[in-house]
Image 1 (cartoon, rainbow, N blue to C red):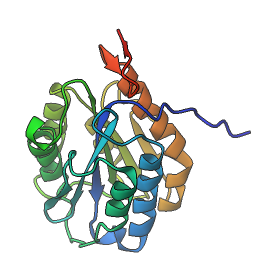
Image 2: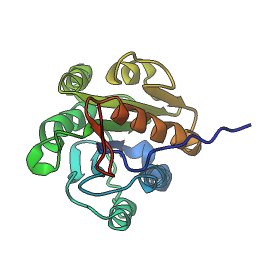
Image 3: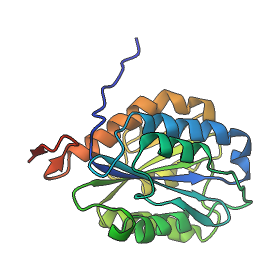
Image 4: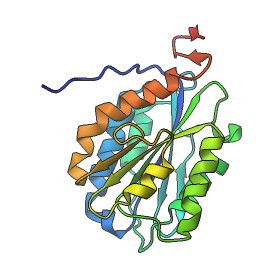
Length: 215
C-alpha cells in the first residue's frame, strides 16, 4: 500500500533547482520539468511562503530565474514549463553549485533570512568540467546553511559524487536519491516535498505562511 505523505504547503522556504541539461537529458527534458512542476504545485508561492529559483547546467551554468522572480504560483509554473533545453556535451556541476551559493542565495535576489535554503540537484551523469571542484563547492554551500538534496538518474549517475554533494548525514533516500530511469522521478515526488517541509520546519524560529512563529 502506498502511503501519501502530507506536506505543509505554507512553509517559508527559498528553494533552488539545479538541473542537468547535458545531451543525455534531451529526450527526457519534459519529464524533468513535469517533476519540478509537481514539487512546486504543492507549495504556496509568495513573499511569506515559498520562493523558487532555477539554474540549469551543461557546458556552462545558466541562471534561468532568481528566487524573487515570481510571487504567483501559476506564473511560476508557466515559467518552469517554458524553460528551454539547450543541451551540452559536458556536465559543469561545479559551476552550477558556485552560481547557486554565490548568486542565487543573496538578499538582493530574493533570499530571506527567515527562510530555509534548500537545493534540489538533478543529474544523470557525473561532473566533467573541473570535477575536483564539485564537492568543495557543495561543501561551501552547506557551510552557508544551504541544505542540498541530490537526485541521480540512470546507470551513469555517480552515486559517490551525489552522496558527497548532499547534506549530511548523506543517507540514501533521505539526502540523496538514486533512480533507475527518468520515469521513476514521479515515484519520489511526495518524498521530496516532505523532505523540503522537514528541513524548513527544522530551522530555528521556523515561520509558517499564516504568520505564526514556532520556536
